[in-house]
Length: 354
Image 1 (tube, rainbow, N blue to C red):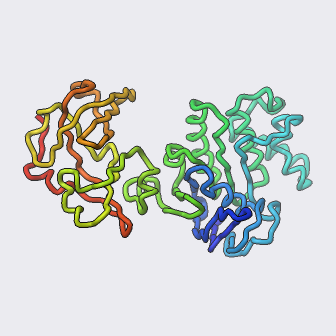
Image 2 (cartoon, rainbow, N blue to C red):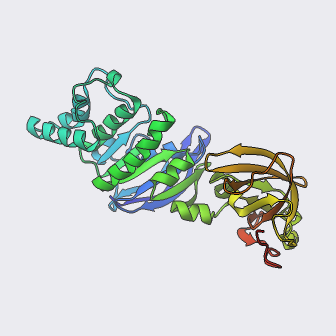
Image 3 (cartoon, one colour):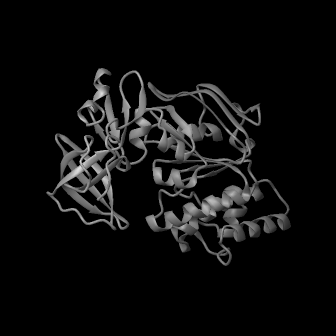
């Protein structure tokens, strides 16, 4: 299903929850609506489903206006974060529910349910009840029930929120594979950026009722279009006056320019680990956090605190140690624009590892 949304608005009393939102989604794509709580993600999802009335705007499925259609006539499957399974029904009956409402012949219902039981890895659990299943299994039942009527669009409202971390990680991969096999257009809401990056074909970053940016996970991470996107995706530190950093002095002519610096933009080493370069700052290690495959290093450079990574293959730094710090690039922004800038001094001469 191809989806087109134009100038969507929604108020709850005096609160403007969704502000003139427009976007398109290609058939078969898996889209993540990512953003902080209260940003408008779920409101958008519920308006697409017909569970919430819109104040103004248009929603079109395959070019046809669906604003006035009730949920059951939109060809949508909906998965809620709390599963919303019928406690008194078995796995089989939960999955069959929508098919029975449509009065499908019993033989076809059985064939469709068993097909989905196989597809979702629930074979052998058909006669069990929700209280006899794990959280991950209950969520698989919810997916199967949503897919049973063969919807053209699958909507998921924070589908992994009620599941523990280990199972959540497994279900992300499972969901990605499932949707690719089924080939259904899907939209899921999340505030977990790792979840969105891992699962989605494209991400829409939603903040304060507006779409800040839409693109592939890589594009959004590599080329954020707004300061909010840059600060929300990935770990970062904001420097209020970018001109205070070596190699970025020229931005001083752009009044009020701030620098957002990601950990991978920074290199840190022992005091004499770099051949002297005009771009190298001196700092002190404040904290070290073991991350399994690397160290997360918090370093103080003058009045600024930066975070970066250091490989386990390199000699371990010590808390309080004086270190050399090289900021390779920064995401700069002021009231007028935003852009990524390389350190102007780092190649004069090129800093090299000893």
